[in-house]
Length: 297
Length: 282
Image (cartoon, rainbow over all chains, first blue to last red):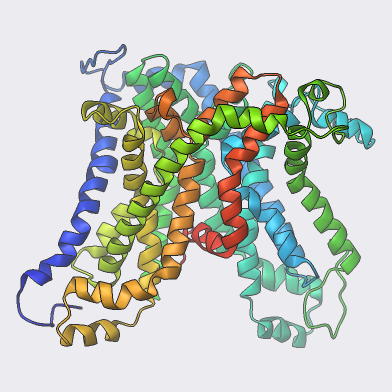
């Protein structure tokens, strides 16, 4: 619209003038900066002084040969799978429970959601204490006769990643809950009625009517939480800084360490590009899908 | 789920009440556990914290930890305030103008521009961090709060634009056409029609940006020097320097969490709306 209204005037240019600063800023700070990072990832640059001698793709080939980076990739995949599973199960379970119209729903809803308002740094500080093997949750588990659940948690290479998953799921599962609850509440009663008229039992209705309707929400949750999971930095920095060993190291943390601690600029840039690639793989189809839906509406 | 009752005649899918409450309570314990830890530990004195009974209530509640945490974190608390207030206001203003243009003045290619803007909210910031540091350093903004404000305003453009674009999409186009026929300019339409009804949109965006920027860590730890540290960076550093003083760490964590928590308690439903906007559905 707008084209048919009035004759040419400077006013017609106002919309462009209004949005131009944002476009310019994003063009520079997102696209040009990514371009620069991509360029640095093809150079030899290490040390404080920029060295733009071309290194071809050797930063990348070197990177994938590094045990630390190999650990990063497997950690980030394992963390993402566990984190998504925990958030979806916990979030969906909580949403189903909250959809039972019991008294106190609002209170419980707020209990499940408030962690989302808190910084990962706070979450990390508290959970680091809880998951301290000598004097956190282990002592409590002993007291309530659940000693078999005791674990070295963050202190052991085999369990540290689970500790991170627990803290991350504590913080983010409320997001899934909110999405699923909105979805459950949007299901029209007529749909359930129709299934009942057809003679379906409640269990069957749940399995064959309600669960399938949750599919698009689950997909959205996987993509949103999945990309957050791939980028996770704060929690790892605060809780373990990648340790013990490289048991909880992630590409996001290694990039930061490589650039800002070890002055390995070329390598850091290559890690950043791999990370961007992983996120883009998840996000770009989603963006196209969402916008197409919007056009159809 | 064995607890599912297939009772004919009931209107909705129901789990027995007792089971529902029991399960809700178990889940609630998990979510409230860290709250218990923070409060109980922060109320102890250092002597009692070093004891072997970390899960018990303090015998003599003490507020010393809060005084200690406050004296260490106060400067960075105010740094965070100085950061969050201007950054939040500026990005809300930009988002509102962008949302207006992208929903009501859809020029050719507007959708492509919007998609390109949106992508900026999903990128891992590691992919722009190195040039960002170099550029901020070159223009003299590295190390302090103004550079961090600029950073948050820029990378806040996608989400704030998204929220306002969805919000303004619900405003009938006829209203705007009528105002145009009456001779209102583009900015006049914004001032007289959209701005007066923008309050809920602004609340969602302001809360969202306030919370995200207050809680943010990666930009803060990368772009600021100790004098300008926001509170998240200072909290993490406090934990490093007062290793055994868990009571001060927990009091500090509470202080850091307080502003966003207050907002959540007072304006929770707007917070959730901002949260779900991230899922691209308005």
